[in-house]
Amino acid sequence: MSGSDAHFQQVRAQAGTIFDGRLHFSRDPEGGIQAYLQRLTTYNVDVEEYLKWSIRQPVARPEKNGAASVVAMIQDSSLTDMRAVTELGNTLSHVVDNMIPLAQDKNRKFLVGCDSSALSLGQFKPVNDEDDEDDDYVSGVTTTSTPVGPIAPSHPLILKLSAVDSSGGEISQPLTEPRLPRYVVPLGRLLVHDMRAIDDIPSDEQPTTEIDPMDRPITLTNYAVVMDAVSKTRSIWIVYNRAPIDLEVGCQVESAPTDEDQMVLFPPGDNFDSAMVMPDVRMWRVATNLLSLAVVADHVATTKSSVPVVANPVPGDEAAGALIN
Image (cartoon, rainbow, N blue to C red; front, side, top):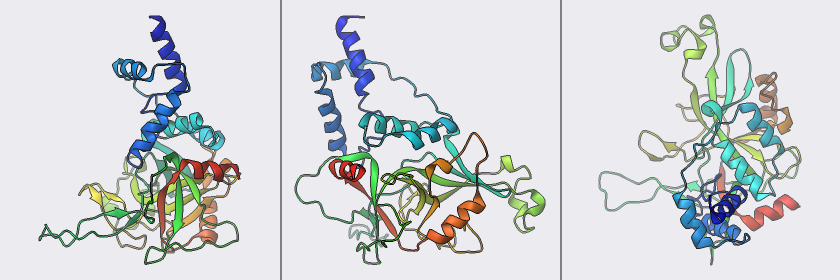
C-alpha cells in the first residue's frame, strides 16, 4: 500500500463515503453531496484525487446489525454529532431480518420494518395531466412551503412534522404535553404479525390463515415509526403516511387511516393519524421482555389525533438549532 493509499484509507475511515448513511439525495441531492465534499476539505487531502481513488475501491457488503444493538444505538446516539448521525442512518438501513420488535401481546406483535420511504415528504395533491385522456390525474406530492432563494442543505436524518387542515394549512399544536413532536428521526414502517392461536381466530378468517403463526405473512401498515429528536426522553410515535408508495403501481397514492383496506391497530376503536406509543425510548427492550401492547394502547388512547400530518425536510442549521435549545 502506497503512502497516499494509507492516507486515503485514514480519511475514508474518518469521513465515511459519499453513500454512507441516509444522506437522502432524493430530498436534497446537491445539499447531501456538497455537505460531504465540504467535510473532505477539513482533511489534508486533494479532494479530486481522493474521489478518483475512492471510486476505484471495492464496495464492501454492509454488515447486518442485531435488533438489540440497533435499539441501543437509537437510545444513545448523539443527534448533534454528524458522524454519529450518519452511522445511525446507516445502521437503520441494515438490520438483521430488516425488522426490530417493538411491542407484543399474546395475539399480535408490532415491529419496525426497515423502510426509508415509510414517511413520504410533502402533502399529497392530485396533479392534472392534460396530455393523458385516460387518466383523470397523475399522483403527485407537493411540499407545504414554497422555497425562496437558495435551498439550504437539509439534515440527513431529521424531518419536520406539521399537523395540517384540509386545505394544507399548518395547525398550531397544543401547549400541553405530550404533543406531536416537531422534529423527528424516522425509524421505519410499522408492521403487524398475527400471533393468535388458530382456535382464537374467527371462523370466517381461518380458511386464509396459516395454523402456525410463524408461517403467516407480516402485514405492512401505512404508519411510520418516528422518534422525537429534541426531547430528552426521545419519545416514540407512529404517524400515518397519507401519501404512501403503492408497490403495485409504483407511485404515490392517496390514503387515509380510516380507509376500509387499512388494518385497525387497536380494535374496536378507529385508526388515527398520529399517536405516542412510548413516552421514553428507554422503555424499548428487545433483549428482555418486549413492551406490552396493552401499555402501548393506553398511551395511544390519551395522545391519538385524527389531524393529518405532513413531513418535510428540515435545513441542517434549523435542525442544529432545535437540538441545542
